[in-house]
Image 1 (cartoon, rainbow, N blue to C red):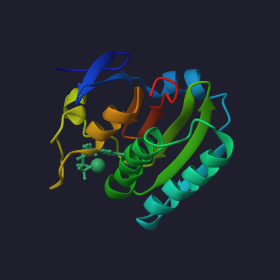
Image 2: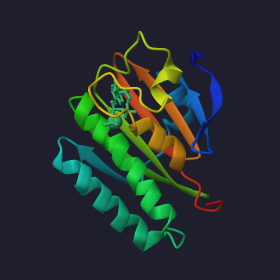
Image 3: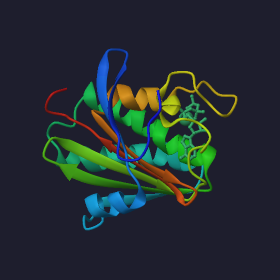
Image 4: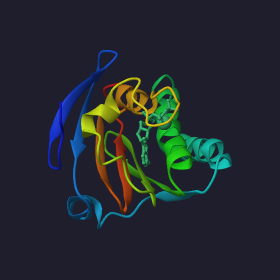
Length: 169
Ligand SMILES: Nc1ncnc2c1ncn2[C@@H]1O[C@H](COP(=O)(O)OP(=O)(O)OP(=O)(O)O)[C@@H](O)[C@H]1O
Ligand SMILES: [Mg+2]
């Protein structure tokens, strides 16, 4: 299974459907460039994994009535995987939060070298795929708990857009 820019695929993770869309930096700008995040947190090191999770939770608790378990806990877990990837695989980045009608949307943006260019894009979304000696569970968990993932990656870095849907669970 191979993906390239502009493609959109319905993938399944433990029975949960997730739309994965691959775009380039131009398309990212066209889609999101004019939007302003409601809040933004830097990702500089390991301690920011717990800190960003806590700050996002506190921020959304006060503003979204639908920000409740079990969706809340699942989304925070999946978001933690994305932030952990920035810490593990890149020199750093930032997490921005946007609020859509159906729930929060998270943009996890880093200054790394991008996902390995020799690997077909869909490989990264398979359970157990890792370029390090790790479980390769991060993207799989994200696919389970976000309804849509938009990925934009190149040697200039990676932008991951994680869209939740609190209305349909
Ligand atoms: N922000 C990123 N920049 C560059 N490469 C990344 C990034 N995020 C993920 N990757 C690549 O994608 C692979 C799969 O990521 P995933 O989170 O699924 O697994 P992992 O991080 O290797 O292991 P685990 O999350 O289980 O500890 C990683 O091994 C890494 O090569
Ligand atoms: Mg990971």
